[in-house]
Image (cartoon, rainbow, N blue to C red; front, side, top):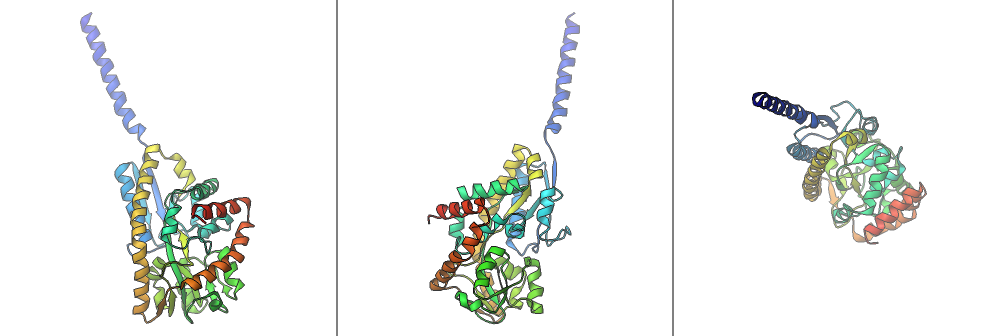
Length: 339
């Protein structure tokens, strides 16, 4: 009797152990993710920061498998990556939200001229009611904002220095956002719309005289080979753009809490790196243009103030009229910036 009892106990223990072995792997959900962007591997901080994010996330959650496709190598066009995120056919993308303003007009807040003037102001918004509201709008549209990457930039031109607003009169320009374009049109610029991946050929062919873009893009897209003037640097800029890593909401919702936490930790590490190299990116752009023989200058405070005053009369009202959410976003943004 005792022998049978012992055998039964051993059998029960073996079954329990077997169950633990089966339950262990089953409880860990391996997720394979594809991440895409339009920039060159290794040279652009957006690619480097994404790799830091992925490396740090995988260290914490080895069941995450993320493959990065730089330079549009996944064969999903730049703007169409948002559609792919919404459908779940793409898991992750470094994506300027302004490319999706046709679907979500409120995304124009992420480049609205005269609001965020430098990296220090962008940092104030990292944990803010403004960011929470923007996240809610993004989630509703099928994407999740994972990182808080802001890129400073400026104006570049083939024909003249860009300073105060009147200096863009008659230029064919690219600004990447329809609300921003309202301001430029008000002082006589004509507008061409295109993603960053197309601006080099547009400058080369004469479709564009000038453009606004980030310091990173000025260098990684070799725009110093086309433009003869750049307005960049200084204490404030008229180009500050949120370029986050977006995750498909369909993918995000399937992740375990541990996997989400791992990606958020990776995002935090990437932000520290990204913020730390943006001043270097501005200096690199200045040096690249100088080396190419271009004229390099920042906006003066007086010129910046003229642009901000113009933005308040043109782009701001245009944005607020888009929706109640747009009006709330601008109010929250200005409040969180202490204005």
